[in-house]
Image 1 (cartoon, rainbow, N blue to C red):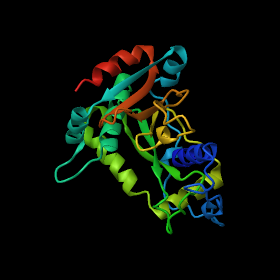
Image 2: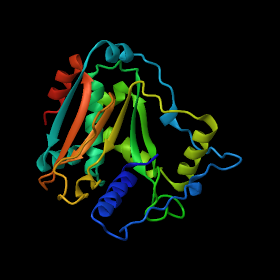
Image 3: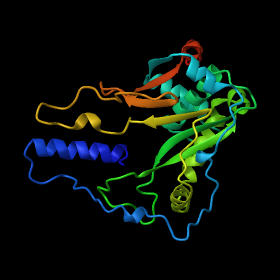
Image 4: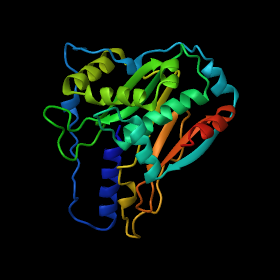
Length: 266
């Protein structure tokens, strides 16, 4: 198992080997025992990322009964700055990822017309390489992420401004400490649980992953992206023209996609 950073470093090493480079610029560190669960396990936090949610809105039936429609939406620098303004609370700051994730999650819940009482989750990967104490070694090859998780009622998400969701995301990132990470590892080892995806949106961002920089001898790639996108998963992709913009790829049931497109108008 490898995360996005490890995948990029693998491709870069492969490309260097293809170009007859004798020494890899970043040799892999393959010892994963540093991520072992503790014995006995010490689960110190509630891990809502694995919580089972009731399907109050019949979302399973909706996703199963209609074909998924996939669309790509590009947010330029002006739109991203506007979203950051919408997501930022007074005397605070907000990253593009947090602002865009908050906006997409709220729009997704609205487009699916969730029952206000429906519990909904947002899951996203948090890079923990520097959050471990001590940090993971440079070149660590494996899974260096845990799920960040936000949980609330759909009514709260839909009725509040974007800054409400942004605060939840920021709190989740802030709480991803060494203690939380090791608690998550122990929870996973003890329960062998997989995250429940009922009323759950998963966001993964490739905007800082250098997939297109790998040169196998023919120059750098001109485009990269997932070959297939599961439903309930949204991916953020960088623009290849060097501009500050993000392309959001999302799949929704056909009846919800039109509403989602309209909700993205800023």
